[in-house]
Image 1 (cartoon, rainbow, N blue to C red):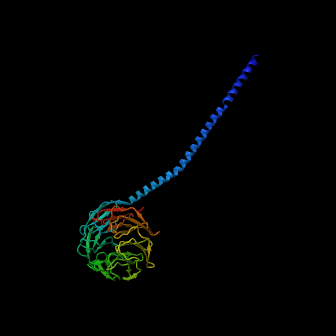
Image 2 (cartoon, rainbow, N blue to C red):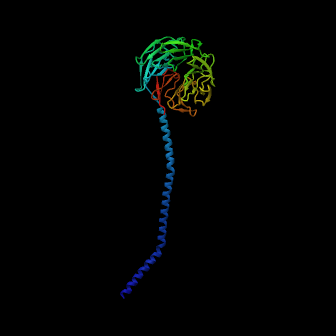
Length: 409
């Protein structure tokens, strides 16, 4: 009897459980479905978020990279030009010569008056120091580093007339020695060190006379010797020592602007006409490239020029290359250690601080960061460390005493 009641009790409880399950199973299934749906939705949301983040992350990185790259590039470009110590005098139409000891000798030029002062830039200490003054004030003169380490100064204008005086600077004693005069007074002439150690001076202007004369300075005798005259009188031209030892003279002007070019042969002491430039020009630049060709840029005809052309000594012909981005004259051109040519400043009805690089391998020009100062009739000197020292010149109102360094990338 007891066992029967217990069994009935168990059966009754089991029936109650079954009734409860049948009553609430739909609710439980519904809740489970809702929880499962929520889990699926949550999982999908997380997956979608990850996808979005993954897709956004590269864009953010790219933007960040672009911004960072832009900032870096700008920073590097700004670092290309660094202001250095100022010269003691503002000057333009001066000379700047790299000495064997690594210092740069700056001489003469024009400020409010013609200058005879000289000073030295020391790259190792980034300072200028005054050295002894020349015996004559002069601008539009030349300075040539001789094989013995001395510097030969020739001609120029003393503020009244063109002059024929010459003097030597000795870096060891920091003193000047007057040597024999040239045969002609000259201004805006050229002076080139030949492979034989002599200096060839060409052209220029004496008073109102345009010169075609040329003469040689012999450091062994300190004397000047006349050599054969050029085929054309010319002033504000260029003279470039070629790898074959000849001198290429280009352009300039007399009563007209010239596109003629000629070669001086030191072995024969004679001049021969070579191919004409495509454009007549003066106050331009000429740079001997690593491959032996000569790059001529800018200058002035009736207007400032941006054209550039190449002379091939083997064919003695000229070919056009791509134009500079700016027209300019009274600019500078410097052959860098990487083979590119750095063009700085100049004038084209306004004074420029723009700078561009010519790549001979691509025959292309690239604009780089501007100089700190606008300037023309300045100088640019390549230092032993490969940097370029740009100094002096003139802006729209005054001769400049500022100097800045370009550091190639």
